[in-house]
Length: 116
Image 1 (cartoon, rainbow, N blue to C red):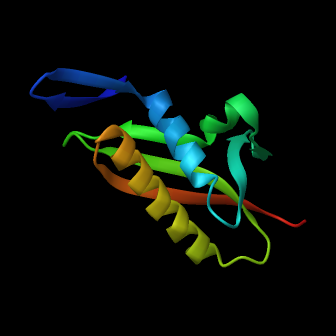
Image 2 (image 1 turned 90 degrees about the vertical axis):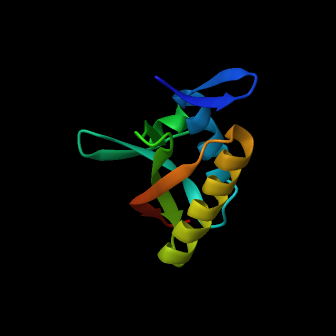
Image 3 (image 1 turned 135 degrees about the vertical axis):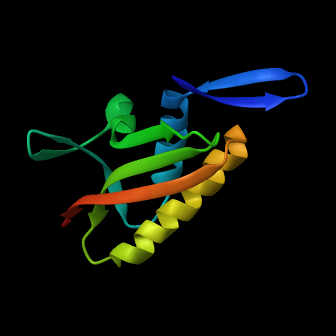
């Protein structure tokens, strides 16, 4: 399934995987974020490389907006709510700027804290 943008020239379809990669790359620029996580059988795994976008879920809503859910691992000693709010602001801005699709909701699920 893909998100659609209509304009006077026609229809543009953007695959959810592309939106996931945009959200992943913009989230990784946030201070305090170690990486995205994937939960499998109760075990949380830090995602790297090509599989990193699996920590992002994109859902197309009925009102032609999208909802994004991120599963993250944060750095120990950072303020969780501040880091989460920074991730939300950065991802929302970047996705809307690059795709012209309105983001109605972003959920951050903290899966773990990493101590260096």
